[in-house]
Length: 175
Image (cartoon, rainbow, N blue to C red; front, side, top):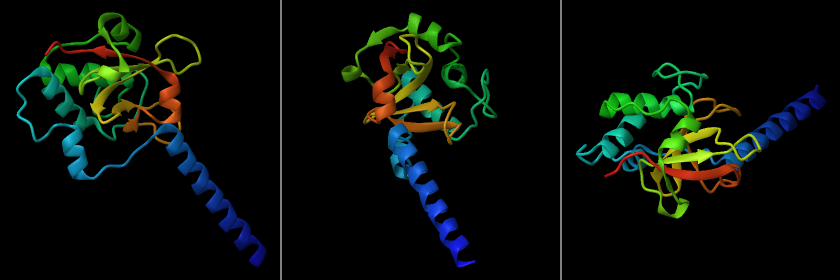
């Protein structure tokens, strides 16, 4: 019986280490309410579409991922941007990450501003396959479709996976 307890504890410890390593690899991050308020500019008056858009994104944090989803019940990566823009600003965006990439003016990583799109080539090719929104301080919000966190989350652009798959930034708003 003692042998099985040891095996169980080793298994639990190993599983926790694997999950922690995955979070570090993907840059999944937890934030306090104060940090979230700063990232989503909730302390600012919604004077322009960029601020309205950023503030609207917070309402989707934690929403489950579903391919083709565009609601607060389930959403995919481009659906997140599409739905929030429509709700917060009344302006529709293209519906796919590739169409968004084609439409938005390119922004180098070093010049990203909160509210800009961030594009990734996650399938090992040079094709845009994923999109999120830059929040500032190297963080971005996106609907993640793989791993243990298949939902809208905030990740670190400097995490190994996202740094290696980053493709380009895109200017959504002119202000």
